[in-house]
Length: 99
Image: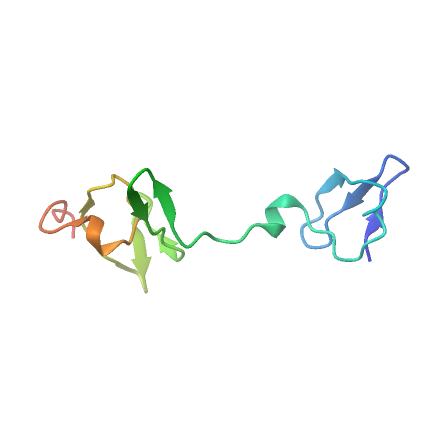
């Protein structure tokens, strides 16, 4: 059940507890989620003509993708995004010094 904080139409997200203002019409709904809880991970990000595929797993301290504790697709990317796992962006043989 949505917890109403006061008469200013403030409600509490039932998933994370964040408080925010809603319209009176939505105030009685039981499924209210804040903006952060409603977000879904993106499958791809379009940068002009480039299409990057972001990693959704674990990361190193340098934002490089990790799979079971091992670097996944190590190396530099032509797009410049270290978390991109689009195989077309991987520059073979570059940036493998630390692997």
